[in-house]
Length: 128
Image (cartoon, rainbow, N blue to C red; front, top):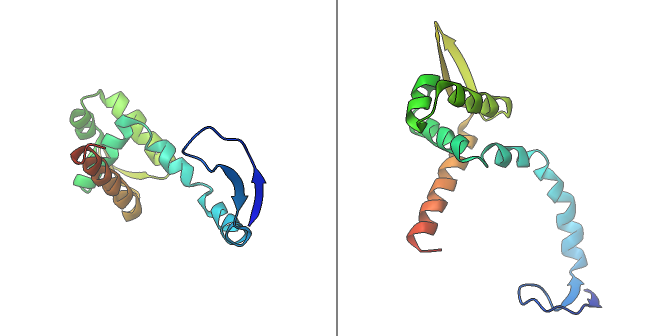
């Protein structure tokens, strides 16, 4: 291990600076795999978009008007958020006559949203 003395007054960090060179060399190149993943979290970092994404986990597809009513917004607001989800690769749409129906892009997004909801519910139940 490489080591360097550092004065630290916080209890949530190491009192000295040291690292396991083997672990760092093994893991550091793997971290590059996250490139692009931040966009998923950025898209879901808005409460309205999470509500929309969650609604789309509860039903295979919803029209813009349904989404607007579910989240209590105008169709323009719902459409704006749905378009953003689509542009970020989280949702897709199809047009049927005068209606536009949205669904989640794939099961990975559905799982991610579902896991986030479960995690949030567990945190509330345990008082965290």
